[in-house]
Each structure stands twice: as C-alpha cells, then as structure tokens.
Image: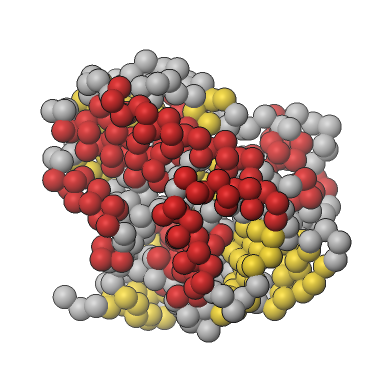
Length: 86
Length: 420
C-alpha cells in the first residue's frame, strides 16, 4: 500500500500522506479559503473537530462536508467555496 | 432497507470516557455499540495517526476496546435522539439504534469569544491547531502564536515546536498567581507536573506570558499579525498561524435534546453517572471538564452502571479525580476583558455573518436569534451561542432536531423513523 494518496482540489492534483484529513490537505495545499461566508469572506477550519462547521467543502459532489472529519482517499475530488479556477 | 440496530448499551463518543464505558459494559456481557462522528478512535485527546506515538495508557485502552467485543460505528453524527433511541447519519446512510441504556461521552469543545480578526483563515483554536497537527498539518518553519487558557496551552506549544514550527509567542490569559496556585496543587499528581515541565522545555527559547491575551488579529485574506495585550500595553507579533481559545466547555447538546438536566454548563450526574433521565448515563468532559483520568474513571463507572453492574469500588478514584474540575474552573476562568473585544463590525455569528452591531444587547437570546439569525446557522449556536451566553447572559440556544445539519434524504428517513 502506497504511503501517499492523491486527491483533486479545485481541479488541481495534490498528493498527501495516507491518513491525512481533508482539512489538513487543503491547508497544506495553501487554498485561500475553504468556504465563502454569507457575505463572501473566506473562511477556514477553526475547531478541527467538527463543531464549528467553518471547514465545509464539497467532497465527491457531496456539499457541506466537514473537511476536518474526513480522511483523504485516493481519487477524491474536493471543491472549496473560494475556488480560484473557472 | 433501513439500517436498524438493537443493543443493550449505546455509547456516544469514542474518547477515553466512551471507550472505557464500552469496555466495562461489554465486559459485563452487554451488547455495546459506540458511535463517533470522527473517523478515528480516541477522541480529541488520544487523536493519532500512528498508535506508537501514543502514551502507554492510551494504547492499552485502545487495545482493551478492540478486544472488548463492542461494536464501533465511526463517522456517525447523531441527528436526533430520544431515551432508548438514537438516529445517526453515516457515510453509508442513516442508522437507527435502539438501546436499553445509553452513555453520553460527547466530550468538550473550545470556548471561542469573538475579537476583531478571529474569522481570518489560519486563526484556529488551541485544541484546533493540536488536532490539525495530529492529523498531519505541516507546520515546519511556520510562525505560530498560541494564546489560550488552561492545561492545553503548554502541550500544544510543545507539539507545534516538536513538529518544526517557529513558536513565536505562548500566552495564558489567566494571571500568574492563579497559574502558580494551580501548579502548586499538582504536587498530588507528580506525573502531571513532570509532563508540564517537559512541555515547557520543548519550546524553552520562547517566552511564556501569563496574564496575556489576544486583542485583535489582522491580515489580507489570512492572519498575518496578532496584537497581544496584558491589559496595560499592547504589542504586535507577525505570524502565519494563530491558535487561540478561552478554555474548554462541555458538549451538552445531545444530553439537552434527551431532556437531561444541565447545571453550570455541564450534564448533571449522580454517583453512578446517571443523568436526570432514566437509562441515560454520562461520563467524561460533558459532565464537567476534568481531564483524562476523570474521564476514564467516570467512563468505567458509567459502563458498569449502564450494564446493570455495581460500580461502587471505583467511586473513590473518580471522586478524587473529580476535584480537578473545580481547580481548573478556578484557575482558568476567562477574564472579563476577553468578553468584550468584539467591535461593532466584528462578526459574532460566523455561520450567518451577524455582526456585533446587528445585535441589541437588551434582547433575550431568543429575540437575538429571531431578529438577527445569530445561532441559526450550521453550527446551531455551538460557537456564538456559548459566546453570547457569556457576553450578555443570553440563555444558550435551544436544541432542536436535527442536532447537526444532515442530508435531506436522511431527514426523510428521520421522519419515517419517528412516524414508524
């Protein structure tokens, strides 16, 4: 079993260690924000344990997933709400 | 096909309290199922990627749990509950659990009090940063400021430092005197004193400031600077990551939904860890923040009691550990200055972007919610409700199903479940 998994973050491939949470992968990838707030401000994880709901992203097409609670899997597609691509 | 499971004891939370409860209940012959919303065993304090990195007692409890025969349902978020019944959402669909007894081991969360800039990306909780580093966050070379309260501050500073961060400031909001009194009390638990000294030595080149807290954070799109204060003067520190919180508070939402009595912000339990609701037990930080030893002791008693077994011989150890709750509360009570750092344009409800200036401090909590949507968002007031309760003595938001946002399909299943 390989020690790394590769996921797609806003259309770009990103390799990370097996067992890494999606929140950590996004932070390491340097995304500008995980979601846009009601007024459009970028937001990212705060509590790291599923309480604050600030790290919500779309994972494999499922919206509003808490990135801090989910472990990265090979081939996973993650879309932030502060996407910089088209 | 709906997924329906029937067990003797359902345990919510797979941290020390939940695991020890499950081990003792299963050891008494009960059929046990443990649910946890994360994908790992161990809760927050025993969060790990490699078991070898955990201390021996944690590894021993994980091994005991795995050998206990208790069932384990990870990534299960409880969306609704009534005594004897839990409804949870999992990646593979909703699950209904019928249980003769349940043990709530829902732990604690950090208290976040709003200040200008607290919504900037890369501002985390203190335990939040710890959780992210333990989940693999690369902090090498990052400038980190840690400003919190309580026994988490030193270990998190040590963790960040050991993982290659440049820890540029470590602050405890409690005054030096309170901290010294707390430390002096640790003579009864020398292992904790040794641990504290070891943590401190891990970042010995960085000053540790007591009576110091964050007044604001600034940055363009993410935190770049933090302004610290000791109440007399202010100074600014450049940083890449800010970890800040005001201590821990019990997670009582599930207990409240079940009708359990809450006193002083914690689930009320009796000698056998029974809540005010028959057949509902509670253990660990949700009954009052007291650390790992207390959580384990309470969990064992709750597990035995939930399985109908006597637990009396274990009460003394629990009662001794329980003294820590009051000592922590006294030493690390959030100072008044932390309550009123937000300015008119500071967001207080992060889910709905409600700013302090949108609130009328003369409102009741319910009026605030109706008039401003504060506490109406995804976190259901778990963040702003706790803050506003302290800032304006507003009652914490009432708990309603679903206890956490769930997919619409799961809500339909919930309706069927309740109707059926």
